[in-house]
Image (cartoon, rainbow, N blue to C red; front, top):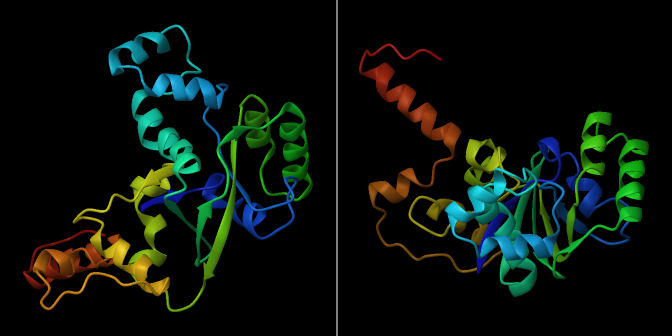
Length: 232
């Protein structure tokens, strides 16, 4: 099982629209925006070597950068194909966890126009953002098994969107490794699934249970207690 952090619109402002409110698709739907390029074109580009892709970009700026293609677009497309994925999305202290329910497809021209009109009517996006969408080919996916958590969410998960790596991206994999061990345990905990059974935690595991805010605070306190000036 893979875990992907997904952001829907600037500041994740479109999350409720996608999942909880009525939208033009008539069912819970998520999407990504990465330029005027189709899903099928992206699938072809994913198989190209980095140097060949970057050479193509010199003549066609609609082609995504290699890192963007492999670290954001590819995971999203593959999620719809394998379905072995859980998405995590956070807005206003609410944590949503959900799963893919279709392969990724491109929005039609009519869907793009209706979508933009709906965002404008509901005041979910500003005019410049809407105009940018019209130049794009948004890629959409239907979702299912939606869970919403507002209380008793481990701090490391509730503040996941504080991390610049996730906040500045659109779709990022939460790689199941030592660094993200605490995040994965938190996801399993709120889903009431069995996490790792640890008889004795190592210092590294304890550090990995801290959110970015908590880790920064800890470093600040250590420096302050050692009489080292630490500016805010």
